[in-house]
Image (cartoon, rainbow, N blue to C red; front, side, top):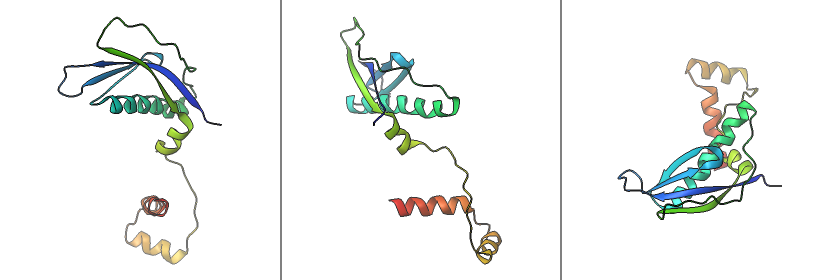
Length: 132
């Protein structure tokens, strides 16, 4: 079963040269931005997803879903809902390090040490190549 959360967001068009849309995510006290509406929505999802990853270390949880849209008086603001599958986001973006134990032939171990080969880097590179 998917772990999907839904929060209201407020998107406001800006006059900034750096980004065209400012995004507020009130339920998580978050702010982000984007140059297009699509990018602003994706950045809001990323903000929430990264918060979920950070919470893995602290044991905190995200606020429960909230489908109530806040009222805003600014005519340049758009209020909508954003959803994100937290488990899927974590699976795709969690880069926390995990210690693994592996067994290799002694002669390869000695050769790799002689050549200053980083075992972790080789394993990561090989796994990324194999999985792509």
